[in-house]
Length: 166
Image 1 (cartoon, one colour):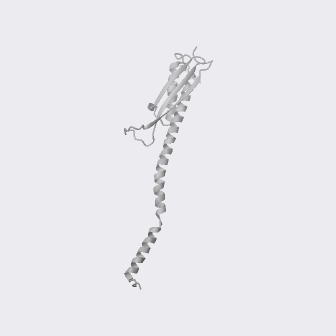
Image 2 (spheres, rainbow, N blue to C red):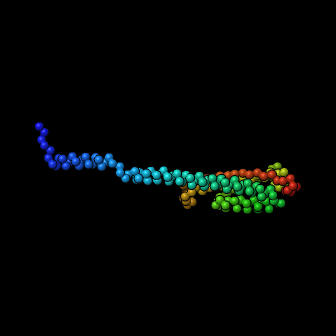
Image 3 (cartoon, rainbow, N blue to C red):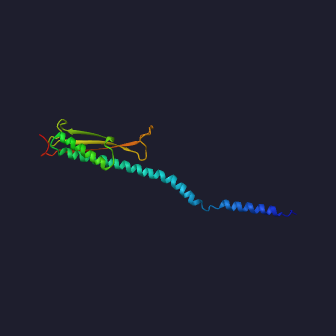
């Protein structure tokens, strides 16, 4: 026959059973897990959306600036006036998208006569490249990784047969 369990042995068994039951319950931890997993997944996702939006805005700014600059260039009466109007159109378009003109590079080429851009039936091509800064990236940090994405666009317009010089 087995000896009878004392009261302290029974209390110890009840305590172990209670501990096992408490360890099996997950009451209240689901919300904590949701918040933790949500932050771990949500923060990079929000940054990705901000980055894609900034790059898309830069691409739209480059495209709009190139197109508008080419349009105003071919409608000008002189080459000096055309360059001035194109620069003004580029500045205005980039400012609409919040991009500093110092972050852009513009080149204007003309065919078939590079020395006379406003020749009748000639073509004026405006190419623009813009450096779009990554969101939340401080400019003062010097790292080996690029802190800006370069996007560009070109636009070509034909000088009217009634306009231009020559």
